[in-house]
Image 1 (spheres, rainbow, N blue to C red):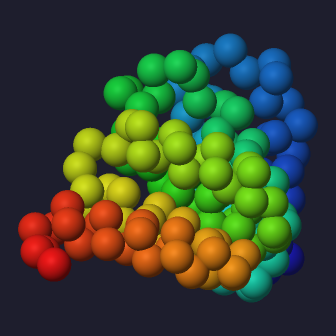
Image 2 (cartoon, rainbow, N blue to C red; image 1 turned 60 degrees about the vertical axis):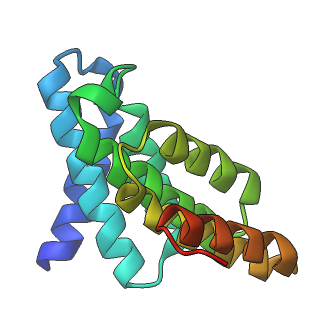
Amino acid sequence: ASPEKALFIAVGQLNKGAEAMKDEHERIELAGLNLLAAQKSKSLAAFLPAAFYLNTGISLLDKTSWVDQYNLSLQLFSACAEAEFCTGHFDEMNKKLQEVFSNARCLDDELYAFFTLTSSLMAQGKSYEASEAGLLVLSQLGEAF
């Protein structure tokens, strides 16, 4: 089997036993593997499986993950928001974006989420709201207008 197929098979099997995992380190490792599988799915334009892997990865995190596993949490939530956008699940996308905006440590960490937000607003025909979001980012970057 190809390395990518092996990744999908291994992550799928590990996910089946995830509920039995009590060790936090193992759960974090599996969340990271779900992120890798999602990234590979996304590169194949398979956004529905990517969203599944990302949501599974998020479910493996605990309440302190934004403190203890900041980078992993940021990557999972940001990528999941994009995958939910690409599959047309705007409510789920907004929930993930809200997590990013509530927990991001700096504007740089929010930029990918803002890109997803503005793209989704444009796709929904909400150009005024998309412009407002873009102007908000520009103002936070110090641009005067």
